[in-house]
Structure formats: C-alpha cells, structure tokens
Length: 544
Ligand code: NA7
Image 1 (cartoon, rainbow, N blue to C red):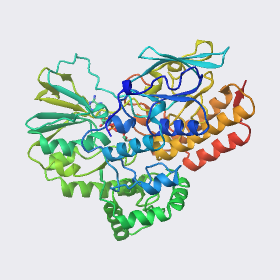
Image 2: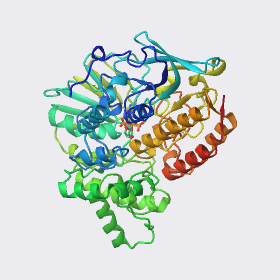
Image 3: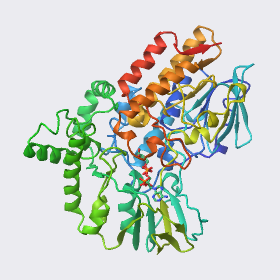
Image 4: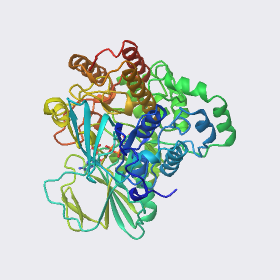
C-alpha cells in the first residue's frame, strides 16, 4: 500500500477535547505494539512518526539488499494467533520490503493508522510536576498534553556521517543506508564509493557492484561476515512451524536471545580436529548467526575463539582470489566482539573486476574532495558516495529530543556519562516516561519484536495497575536506578561484546561516553526481573 500523507489523516483524532493518555514516539515494531495495547485498554493514545508511513527502521533502511538476520518466522509479532497464522513469510530471512509490507498489514489489520500522525517529529517534551502531565511539542507546531510519554524511537535510527576535520566538498550524490530514498537509486554507469563494512555495508556492497561501473569499498575495520544462506520458505515447512507456533515461541522466549536456531553447547576444545571441522562446516552451511553457535564456548573461551577464527579465515580465503584483498579482509579483533554480519555473495564480490577494496584503517578518510574521497594520500574520483557508517545507537534518538523532567533536568545531561535507567524502561527524575528497547534492556541482543511485545505488555499492565490503584504518576527511584546501571555494567563487562570498539559501547560516536549499553543477562532473566518488580507492586518505583 502507498504511504499515507499526513494531510490524509485526522491528526486531531486523539486530541478532540479528549485528553491524551499517551503520546508514543515512533511507529516501528515497538510503537505499533504499544499503541495496539493501549487501544485495547480503551486509552486515548497517539503515535507521532517522522516518516510518511509505519515501519521505523524498516521504513528508512530500504537500501538494496536490506534484510533481517533473524528468521522471519521468529522476527514477527506473536500477540495475535490469527495474525501469525494468516501471514505467510516468503523467505527464511525476510527482506526489507517484505518486513515493511508485514508492518503495513499489521497497522491496517489492527486499525492503528487512525491514531498515528505521520511526517511529524517530536521536538520537545516537558514534564509538569503540578499536573503530572507531559507537554509534547512537534515540528508542525502542535502542542499535546499527555499523561504518559512513551519513547519507541528505535535503537539504530539516528544516522552517523564520517567526521573529518576538513569541510565536506564533494559535489556528487551522497546517500546513507539508514535514510535511503523512497524512489531508489540507479547506480548504472557510475563510479561509486561505499564507506563502511558493518551489516549495512555488507548487504549493499554486492548489490551496488552489480550496477556500478566501478565500486570502491572504504574499509576501516574488517568483519567476520558469514554467508546468510537465505532461501525461500516452502509451504510444508511453514505449515509445520505454524502447527506448533506456540511451542516454538515458548522455546524462543526461554533462550537468552529470544529466538532459537541449531545451537551446540559442547566445547570446541573437547572435539577432535576432524569433529571440529565437520561441525564448523555444518554450521557454515546453516549460515548466519547460528555459525557462532557451532560450539558453546566460541564467544567465551580465547582458545575456542582462535579455532573458529582459523576456520573462518580458511573459508574466506577459499572465496577471495586476490591475496592482498584477502589479507585486508581478515579482521584483527576477536570473533564476536562486533555484531557478526550475515552476507550474500559478500566476499565473492571482491573477485569482480569492477570492485576494489580501499584500506582506510588507522587514518580513516582524510577528506571529502569535490571529486571524491582522499584516503591514505590518494584521491578516489567518484560520482556517488554511500555512507554505510551506522548510527548513534540506543541513546541518539532519545537525546535529540529536548526532554525536560523534574526541576528542569535534561535527559541529554543526565545521560552525558552514559545512559541511566531502571530495568531499561524508566528514568529517575522523568516520571510517567517510558523508553522502549533502549539501553539497559536486552533489546539489541535479542529479537526486537519479542522485546517490543514484552515491554509493551509491561508498560500497559503498569498503567492498568496505576489506574486500579488510583496512582497518577510513576517514577523510578534513584537508588533502584543506580543499582540497575551497575548490574547492566557488571554483566556487560563479562560479555565479549564489550571488548572492542563498536556501537554497543558508544565508541562510534565522537565524544560519547564509552559504556556498554544493553543488558547482557539474557532475555529470560530480564523478563523474570521485570515480572518480579511488577508483582511486588512495582518495587523500585515511587507513585503519587
Ligand atoms: P555499523 O555496524 O556501525 O557499521 C558502520 C561501518 O561504518 C563500520 O564498518 C565502521 O567502521 C564504518 N565507519 C564509520 N565511520 C567511518 C569513517 N569515518 N571512516 C571509515 N569507516 C567508517 O552500522 P551498520 O549500519 O552496518 O549496522 C548497524 C546495525 O544495524 C547492525 O549491527 C545490525 O544490528 C543492524 P568501524 O568498524 O567503526 O571501524
């Protein structure tokens, strides 16, 4: 369905003399589910969304090759049995257009659009202690008064551009994977440069290479890309999953990452060389994230990690023909400290005569010239530059809203040394505000859709409890918040993910505090903690 423009929508639907119960920022997986829950409760909620349509991440990242690395049958809502039975995923890993179509279907099926204002950005939100309400302003000049202010702004939604000391002089076309033009881009006959080889770069590079006259890939850090091994889903397989969907969902929720795949728990060190090779080969054929679970200790034991690196290198070197390119494509960090990208024909692309890999390790890109990019003293002439340079993850889209809590406290200042919150959901000093899938929760370390449903339910149940017990406002206690921040930090320090420069630790944003942000204790432990707090009448929170 075509995107709906804001002028086709009754933007006052939720403010016609009926005070708003909730303003939700963002119409991605989290925002849509939150809205659905609040609608079911008969509350008056309104979503404000910057894009012209629903989708969040899956609206903006519409670059060629964009695809999820979690299986579609699990990267989907489970709140409605009818929905999960009637929707037919086409591929093992859904592409961006398929996910967007699904989200549009959800919005229509549950009649959510009537409560969404599109093409509008929330600019400020200010809490009034006397009324216990938030005043929310948008870039369209609207001012909304709401009891609850719920951030569902996405954890990878504020795009980043490379920082150089020189001015940006490039005169050609410039794109960012995270803000891809709706109408698409035709690179035929063009000399293109891609900066960045994270998940987005890995997905777009083979697709641009098919069109461009020449593609130069500017690589700062090589990654342990594993073939996704994507394929169409056959109807038999889908029927089988659907006949036991509840069981699959329950097993997934019991897993630390909230999804399941063929996983082994034995040690790589206990296997013989032959057994090891066989197992690695087997998981390589399965592909994608499951490769990291070929043995149970690849991400926890240095020696086991070296063994998987050795196997991975031999695989990559079998594919890449040029030895110098293969050397450059060999990572020097441990396996698994950065998110492992899943690719399709990624390494094969470097065998094409129209593709070259440019090493920008150490120095980075020195300068954007009028004609292209200056790297390691050499100018690369380009018609177009694609920034696959990532996001100000987890906190970026929150702090870019001017949020003011009690006594004039600003969220951007409160989080200047790293994000602080209680159970990833609430911030001391900012009553009646909830933040979904941000720092302090499993979010990016688990299936986001399942995480969105869990947090949406927790928030909705909390609001229902407040109404039953006649509480007007809820605020996280500072000591509960401080203890949670410490717990998140301590768990993070045990995770391999905290050991190198990445967006998990804020290392990709100049000046950002280096703090491991997600909760690494696993999805089931997090859910148990949230349940326990709710059962104890929201221990760690104060009410008025
Ligand atoms: P990522 O994973 O943050 O990757 C960004 C890439 O851009 C990464 O290779 C960076 O190198 C590179 N980069 C960033 N700035 C520069 C400069 N200045 N010069 C050269 N290279 C640069 O973002 P993605 O969009 O790929 O993926 C984000 C998440 O979305 C992903 O993890 C999935 O969860 C989905 P670096 O490694 O920092 O040296």
